[in-house]
Length: 176
Image 1 (cartoon, rainbow, N blue to C red):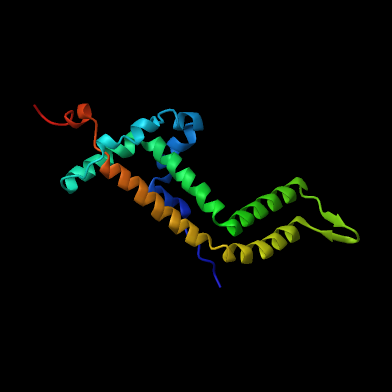
Image 2: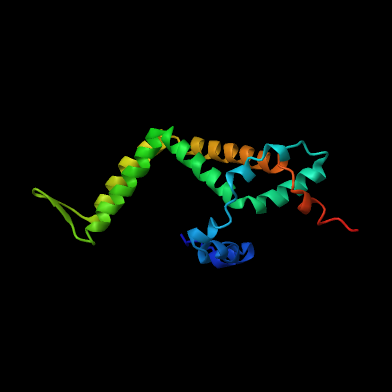
């Protein structure tokens, strides 16, 4: 039976994945958080208001996603930490797989000898996956990922749509 080969470069070139994520690779972590807004500006309750219509909400979201992007990244990281701390089985699975792969990597391709038994790196990786996959399925990572998407979406889009633009920015787009 002949194997079907899919040209991956044809699929990925249409999506422009390389260009979309080039900004993430080129910038350092300190550059990413250099435009972190102060907490007093992020939680300015005087600027909270209900938008009049969908167009105003869309304008606010477009402005605030760019203006508070680093703050929203911090909110997302805090939600990730909270999700891992409230799901200890998933945290254990992540630590178990990370430490297991680190230990196997430290062998540098040599076999592991325990007593009279000899294990190759292939056997060690297989054993790690045989143990990690059931534990990983038990820890419900999809539930955690879906909660994380929902919670961060509600918080970030909710904040971005309720936070009004500053006065000087609100009138900059209008024709005089």
